[in-house]
Image 1 (cartoon, rainbow, N blue to C red):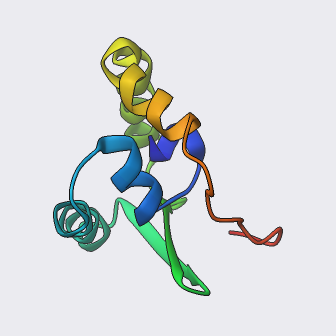
Image 2 (cartoon, rainbow, N blue to C red; image 1 turned 90 degrees about the horizontal axis):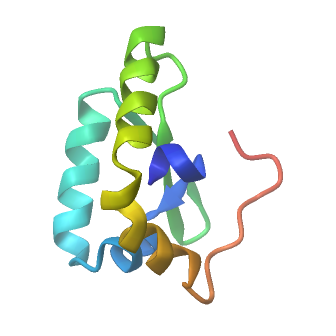
Length: 94
């Protein structure tokens, strides 16, 4: 979902994945500590995005995985798309 959207905050992932905040935050922390994701704070929100310094082969694997799993991600993507009150991103993001 982060690859598809470019950037997501924790609240958006909670809504899309229909899971708890502690679980989502724990997984995001692991992805951040591995260097796969970067985060930024904007007001009360923390946004996560793919690390732009990832090697090209990693981006290729992630893109291939996203394309191959569209049916599996469909329900999560629909929940995200239907989410009301999504936080507004700064126009000077990333």
